[in-house]
Length: 340
Image 1: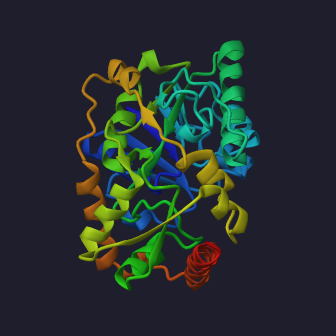
Image 2 (image 1 turned 30 degrees about the vertical axis):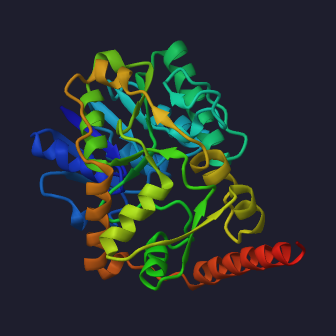
């Protein structure tokens, strides 16, 4: 198979790239070249910015593909450009959507591909929905060979999944655990969540590439395992060798008082119990199985971050904000207790 990845070096795409190359496929990567040194040998590099449509048209002028995968499109204008660039040049165009596009809050915690797409809380999700709608219109009216792939919370060894963190990522949450500080957990921490290791996601994605039954359809790829947010934080703390001090905070409160905007990522996503039905994926890719358990993958990610200083991004602003939230809740408790 001859494939082109737009991106190819991110959390989701890196493992897919490795798997394709290991299987002996011909792979082209179109990106700006910032992280290509980390990739295994064998990929053909097309260095350029996908937003420079004229330049990209020159780079692919003499090329045709069995599959083109778009990992970095977020608004309709970007997929409109892709349709212009790749119409007639690929047998399949795979668009990375988002499971956050599903109905929020969900009418049924069991999510299938038939669950309505509607998220009033998060513009990111609404833009992904708009991208899907445009691409499916192109499929119905022009025969553009699109496949929609919806990841949920997919992680790699470079990033530990936590519920509430700042702009610099999860490292400051791990530091708070190490220092015995309160760690903010949205809600009561008992809602179910699905974290999927990028190695498992890659197996499902590669199985959809070149799959004629996936054309004109949408499929999500997730683990079958569900864990609570309390369990996620307890696993991370155990990997650090500490006992976590979890502070449960209403998601609406976090949104209302945050320097970061948690409306989308919490109210429109993580605050909801979500369990995915992967029956459709398993019909399309019978060999698919997510084999990295949450406790195994999370421990691996923690160990990687501890061993790699470049992943340890300090975030003093988030740290101070977390302390303020904890202090405000404690004052409220003492005030209410004092009135009794």
